[in-house]
Image (spheres, helix red, strand yellow):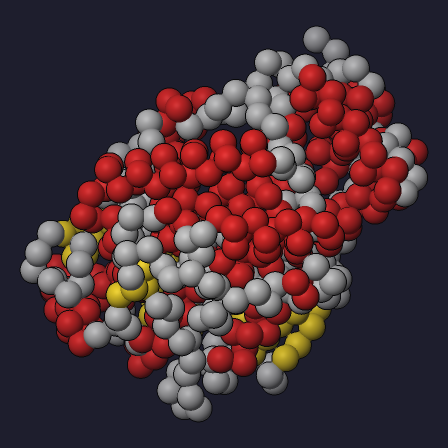
Length: 536
């Protein structure tokens, strides 16, 4: 998820206001027609339920996983009009206490999960119940995942031919010149046209408000009077919209790695803030590599590691590794490491090996997986459509140029690549919405749990604090001095204890609590790794 806010030295530049009106005007705030339409669709879903059965790819899935579909209106203002089907999955509650085999755990209902994005697919989420840290929850809840509208097999959205999605080795200039900007503007315009041409009049209905409404229909289809939900990253945003629109329908909600829901920051300023935060996380990663210079030989300081990275990028620009890996592919791989620190050892090993003359690890980790082109293109299309539809964006590239040129002076790592991802929103051909003011008053919403890592770059910490301020009765649990994106059910036992206590017993600490960071990853010594490799 490319959103949320962090006010650092770079983030202080993010106060620039939007100076251009959204293309095509802006739709009004959600009205009575959509609210009434949601109630109609939910009542129909409650009556019909979900006919769960074998999944279409059951041969590759554990037998416990079931699949079904739920019909939702494309346009909630016209609930009897065109319907789309959402693919839903489930693993039933096991009732097995992992710490006491003789105890039968009572079922508490369905726990619905969304992994974020926009464009993330939660269809295989229920399989986490086989992991040790999830077994207590899997005993008490039916674990339910689904593909949101536009994703996977849920009325999939597309903006271009998937065969053209993965381009060859590409540049990734941190300070692009006028010629390169002109080229990327042309590509952004073409992408926006492709979305409009392929989706037609349906394009405007792929947005966060409809994702929240879909969630209420899914709740009803599952037979749940009140929803138990966990959203990660972008899932926290439309989860917060749900809490605002349907507070009486909430049982328990977990917001994992919350994005900033402030209506003036969705999504243009959120993305600027994310670029600022990634610079800090990139420095964390470089400092970790420097502490293990004896293993990787990339430099004993963060600055020296930066020079090694730039050396590799320049070499890849001159001669792409494996014919497919250029500077953009390198940047993308190291950006992923900004999300999850468990990638740090393998990324550092690949960079080290490449600079020592062995490109194979780098190619293996960064080259595009052609077989996944359709899935990747679909995820990109949904991401773009939802963010572009959700809110106003500057329509004059000079605004983007000014804001990001300033930001790139202090945060060059991610800034311009983030621009190119979102620039189609400047030329979007569907109406934009005005973001809803996420907010609940005392007693309107049951207590909710917000989880956040203090140095999360993808959903910076200020977003969690903003959500905490806006949802009355919420509790914020912070993983201190850590930066992985998504902390629920991860390696931090303290965070998981708060999660289990809330979802299993409804217990929460006072307004805030903190956990020590999980352990940093251990470096992988390439020489020792080779020595341990079995001889064939």
